[in-house]
Amino acid sequence: MPTVSLIDVASYLPGDPVPTEYFTQFSRSDRMAKNVMFRSPSGRHHIDRDETAVDMAERAFAPLRERHGENLAAEIDIIITHTQLPDNPVMGAGPELARRLGAKPAHVLDVHNGGCAAFVHMMSLARMLMATSDARTALIVATQNCAGPVFTQPDIRKLAQAPVPGDGCGVGLLRKDDSAPILDIVCRTYPEFAGDMEFSTNGQRKYWEPGEGQGCVSFTESKITKVFARGNRLVPEVALTVCDHIGVKGRDIDTFVTNQPNRLFLRNWHDALELPAERHPDTFDRCGNLFAAGIPVTLDAENRAGRLRNGSVVLMSAFAHAGDFAGAAAVRWGAAR
Image (cartoon, rainbow, N blue to C red; front, top):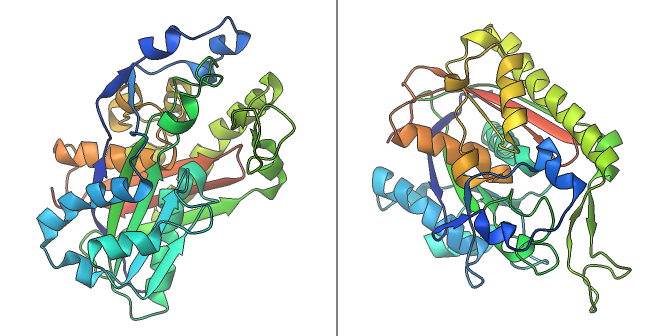
């Protein structure tokens, strides 16, 4: 397989920070609010009602164009997008994003099943496409845009989970060269857990049918317990598999970046790798749970702050939904900033 590099990342956060007080004014007494899965971040961002996923992706891409030149879009051979809440349920974001950027990629994919691990999933897909084609440059885009539209609905904003998600978009630029090589990627699917994440309208209607009821991912305490146990296991499991493949101990990783569900997961994951907390950066308190965008947004924040040393090993790992997918990737960092 030819060497493929993650040569840069960039991100976009919409609007002004939304304080937790927005939600506490609506909250109701609920045992779930005490669950560690739903302990609230200090802040988060919400997209405006008229802001689209493609708007967010275009704004996240802008710093890449500034750093790599106005002709960057013309070089893109592959666009892969993951959007938490598609603007158009029939069509993905990729073709419209290509039009906006002025790109004419040979391959456009819109993927959904990667969930919070979608950034790693898209890296894997882009690398495989490059290995089997003449494509040399890929743009991968992870957009989380359901916090504002879904979690501020009048019936949903009262729930314990409502303050946890935030909106944001992170993008990665991959190129077929050895400037910042992807050292290894592991992706695993666990279909036995695929039915444990449910979307409900809190009524009998299907989400596409007219009628009352506001849609949201539904939780029960028993399901939360299962998801928590799986997440604790899966993220270190795939991360340490990658470490084994590249001949590095978990405790020797320079920077560990994961999805950002809650503080307890973050603590348990770096403890499992025997890493100090300072080598496991997070954006949870500033951004909340960004789902698939959590990894690229956090990477971008660390890179812009100058905390990612070129030549260091950056390990990314995440699990999706109720544990039906997990992925990890290691990169020899060398991105621009």
